[in-house]
Image (cartoon, rainbow, N blue to C red; front, side):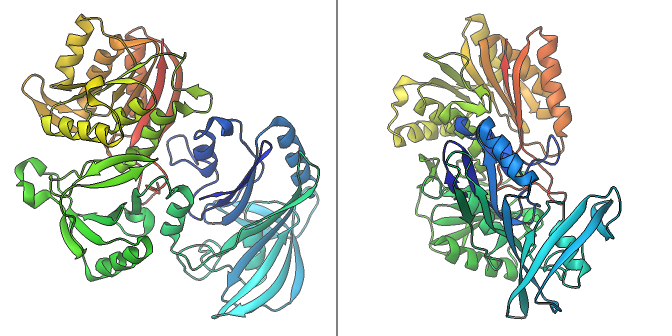
Length: 526
C-alpha cells in the first residue's frame, strides 16, 4: 500500500506516478491529497506541505496537526527539509557533479530557464552522476529550492532531459523517470532528524503500480487494471475479479491484447481470463451472447466470490451482461461501511438506529455495506433475480436477510407508496441505470427523469438525512448533473446542509483522453 509512515503528527506516503497531488479542477479525478483526506476521519485535517508532479513518484509528507503544519512549512520554506530525487536520462552526462542556478519563467504549460535577475524567484538544483545502466544514466538531484518543474527544466537545460519528459525533450517512455527517493526533516513531535525513503522502480508497469499503491490487496481483490485511454489502451478495459480477469471492449481481442492479458495473469496470479463485447443493445441480444466468454486459462465453474474492503460478493460470468458488482462504486460502498462520507461529513448527523433505502439495488452491494455498519436496509429493484442474488450476498457476510426488506417493483411507484405511508429513512441511495423500462412508469432516461426521482426521494428523508445521487451517464457533464440535483432540492424548499462531490475511484483514472463518466454527489438535507 501507499503509506510509508504515520503517527499523530505526520502521514508519509509513496505517491504513485500517474496521480496528481490534488484535483486539477472541481470535477476531475481526485488527487492523492483529496483521496486521502476524505478517506479516513483521522486524515480529515491533512495539509499539503509540498507537491509532486503527476508523473513523478516518491516520498510525500502531509501534516496532521496545526503544530506539525507550522513546523513543516517552516522547514520547507527555510530549506531545512532535504529532498533527494533520482532521475534517468538516455543522454550523456558531461559533468560528474554541478549546481544549476537560474530563474524559471512560466510560458503556457511549461517553464523556461533564464539567467538570475533582480526580482526573480531563483531555482537551484545540485546534480550528481551516479551510474550508467542499460543505456540509461542515473543522476541524483537535490533541489535546494522548490520551484515547479525545477529539476526537469534544469536537467533539460544542461543537456540531459529526463526519460519520459515529453514537455522538456525527453525520450518517449511509459512514465517520467523521476522519483522522490528520500526526504529528511526534523520530526515536529520529537525534534529528531528523520529520514523517509522509497525505492524507485521505473521499469514497473505504470498502471499496475498505481493500483498496487491505492488498493490494499489484503482487503480487496476486485478492481480495475486497465482503464481505456488513461492507461494507453483506448476502448479496452480489464478488471481483476479475484482469480479471474474480465476484459471488455467493443471488438474481439487482438493478438497484442491477448499478450498483455497473459502478462497480467502472471502479475495477478489469475487462473483465467474472460472477454465481454461491449454493446448498447443488451436487451435485443441473447443471454449467452452478452455473457463474458472464456479466452485464456481456466473457466469459472458457476458462481465465484470476490472481496472488497473485506466484504464478500458473489459474481457469475454466466448471468448475462453484468457479472454482479459495479467496481466503480467501491469507494461509495466503503463510505457506507465506515459511516464516513468525507472530511467533516460523517454519514449520520446523530448516533442511533438508522435505516437506508437503496433504490435500483441490483445485487444489493450498497445494502450489504450499510447493514454491516448497523443499518436496517430496504432494497428495491425491478428484478427478482437480482434481489435473490442480493440476499445471497447478505448471507455470504453473515447477515440475516430476514431482518431486512427486499422489494420487487418500480422505484417511482414504491417511493410514492412509501410517502403516503410516511416512511422515513436516514439515507436514500439513487444510482439508476441510464435507461430502464417498467410497466408502471414506462421508459426512464436518466438525464430526463432524474429530477423526478429526486423529488420522490426527498419526502422520504428524515431531517438531516443523507442522499446519494449518482450516475454513470458519460454524456452528462458533471456541473450540469450537480446543478440539476441542487436546483431540484431548492425548488422543493429543502435545504442542503452539506455537499460532497466524488468522481470514480483512482483505479478508473480520469484523463483528457478518457474523461470521467461516473458522477456522485452526497448531500445532507434539512
